[in-house]
Structure formats: structure tokens, C-alpha cells
Length: 188
Image 1 (cartoon, rainbow, N blue to C red):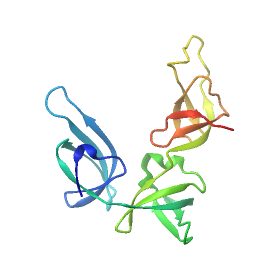
Image 2 (image 1 turned 135 degrees about the vertical axis):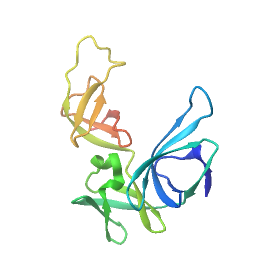
Image 3 (image 1 turned 180 degrees about the horizontal axis):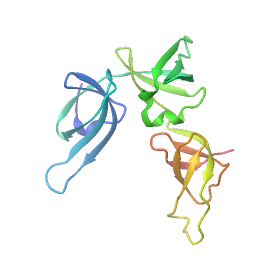
Image 4 (image 1 turned 90 degrees about the horizontal axis):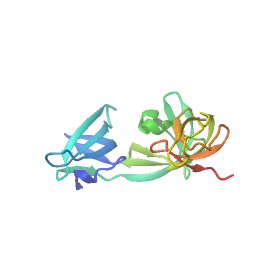
């Protein structure tokens, strides 16, 4: 299915130069002179190689239709993750690289959505938000205003993020899996 380049989103699978690519990141850039263009970071599904590509926003690209299927995360096996089909209980082994920067957010028995193109796994979608514990948070500096200042913190999965000054070590917070950003305090 053809679509305009400016409609490319992370997680989509496109065909370019006779190969299949999964889109990791996209950014629309509008320079001071000339027309806008879209910068896309993508990974080759066969080789795993990453590349960056630029298209004018009016260009068209071939988008491949993906089938979505839910799986349950079981455990890590070296550089692979083991997923289980909740209906048939069959196990599926996938490379951890397929998750990219979201890999640290995996939690036991988490329900994931696997994107398939002609039966081949091409991408994994984690839940939009997860609850994690803050294991380390910088102390509040007096004189900072609460409205605009965030402080660095480290989460129980090792990921660093920025949190409001009232969050302290030991508290549980909700974090976006897409960009590791703070959402809210976890409800107890």
C-alpha cells in the first residue's frame, strides 16, 4: 500500500530498495529554506543493519500491512526473549534487538503485541506505560521551583529518567516505555 512519506510512524514496516525495513524513529524537519522533509531511522529485517533515509514529505513509500498478535513475555534466553502464545501455549524465540531501546521495560508475564508480515515477526509493541520503582533520586535543591525543574533518577530496571522534585527513592512511578519519561506517581 502506497502512503505519503510524512505519514511514516515508528513501528511501521516499509519496503525500500527491494528490502523490508521496520521504522525505529521518524522526524519531520522544516529547514529555513526549501521544503520540509522526513528523516527516518530504520532497521533491515533480514540483516538487522540500521540506516537513515530522507524523503520529501510529498514522496510516497510502500507500506507493508502487518498482522498483530498478542503474546506473553516469559523469560530471557541469552540474547533472545521467549514469548508464549496465550491461546496455544507455543513458545516463540525472538532476538532482543527487535525491542531496541524499550528492552529494559520488559516485565514478567507482560502482554506484548507482535507485528507479523507474512508470518515473520518484524516488531514488538510494549504497553505504553509501566510502573517501576525509583531506586536512586537526587536530593531537592532549595530554591528550585517545583513547576519547571525536574531532577535525575534511576529506576529499578537501570534506566535513567527525570522526575519532579517530590519523588524520592523507594517510590513507584508510571513511566512511558516509548521515551522513558515520567507520567505520574503510581497508585497504591
